[in-house]
Length: 150
Image 1 (cartoon, helix red, strand yellow):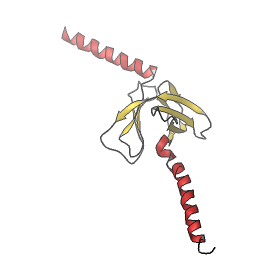
Image 2 (cartoon, one colour; image 1 turned 180 degrees about the vertical axis):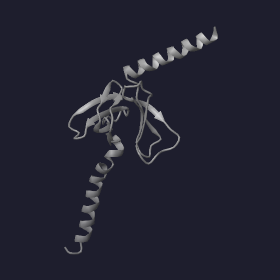
Image 3 (cartoon, helix red, strand yellow; image 1 turned 135 degrees about the horizontal axis):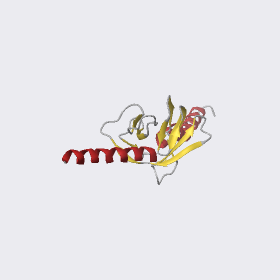
Image 4 (cartoon, helix red, strand yellow; image 1 turned 90 degrees about the horizontal axis):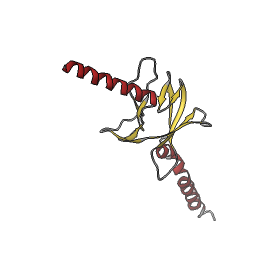
């Protein structure tokens, strides 16, 4: 019996390691990222006040573009949004967030999110307020360029 104990122990440990390995990779699968912001930000039509949040992919194997925002305790879903794929040339070793330009007094709107080590990420549509501001800017630029042509 003593001769089989090391083999049995090794098999047991390898089995346990195989069971626990998927848990260790959960953050890579769902891109779970804890964020702390010191000012409000907009994510599509939801404004997140300053504070801590968890952003991650919804666990749907067939749809890898549904993003959820949780409170810091992860017991309340604040928003669920549909993102479109975004690409970049070089991966970074940290989470990377980019924002749309915003009107003075309006919170910046999240444009893209890249998980550490990934060259593919997620792009979010601007919220209604940011889209209206962009539309107004475009109309003003068009009017100014037309006025200059006269």
